[in-house]
Length: 345
Ligand SMILES: Nc1nc2c(ncn2[C@@H]2O[C@H](COP(=O)(O)OP(=O)(O)O)[C@@H](O)[C@H]2O)c(=O)[nH]1
Ligand SMILES: [Mg+2]
Image (cartoon, rainbow, N blue to C red; front, side, top):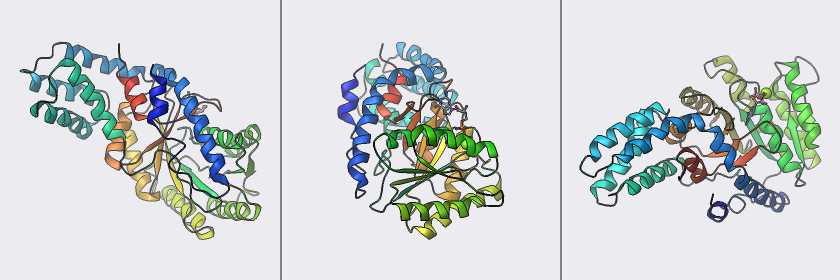
């Protein structure tokens, strides 16, 4: 694997961070994450096996490639991409890009078409004008709101983020906004302890998550905390009442600190198929997402579906989860992801 390529190509640490005292620390963290990303490539490759098996047929298809029959091949390719969860619109877009290049003479050989396919997917995954880094503001604290359906990996991702930032000396406060289940606060408390982050959880059963988040931001402002990460209850994107509650949480954070939350990240379970798209639409509508985190890429992930989410909502994937321990979070890198789906033999 050309690890150095990824290190050179991506400026994880460089772009986004401009927070006053926190900036240096957060940039340093970026470097740590980037180095880690290289060594974990293998895990994504292992985890996306289900999608890759489906896409393995693509190479078979290309083995019969002739320029004269390219239209046939492209139609079959479109079908294959749809089977691999890309969704019809995105599959068509990817194939159209190749078609254009065949017409203009830029794509001629089997190798050309394969390379163009990969590039075409990388292009979809690279959201122009949006950083795949966390975008921290000048304001202190930076506030992240983490949302998603039940079991997607919200709390685990928060634990991993707390660990990464905490181990670099960033002062982190975790907010147990999943007030529905007592076990949820306990789970977050465990992560707080492991990552030596502070924790704020409801003191009584009546406390609503929006008021808890208001208090958390208030506390962070008073205590000079760098980063506040708010956990939320998992909710079905179809549950209007709960979705409205999420909007309230967001407003209440902004009431205490205008401009916050600075990032609203949707956690997507990498093993779900196209239902991801419906989830993403609804959450985006309710709380205006700033980015995505794709979890469980070490499992039987169906990576294809996320391509259509990025394509439709133009939201960058900021991180991928590749396991259950604190170390298993890495910044998203489109080239690496696509290489995992279409490995070079
Ligand atoms: N294999 C794997 N499991 C994960 C990953 N992220 C979360 N999980 C597991 O998924 C389950 C649900 O995670 P949790 O964080 O509680 O989800 P939440 O309901 O969204 O907060 C737990 O068993 C986690 O250990 C990941 O990247 N890889
Ligand atoms: Mg949770």
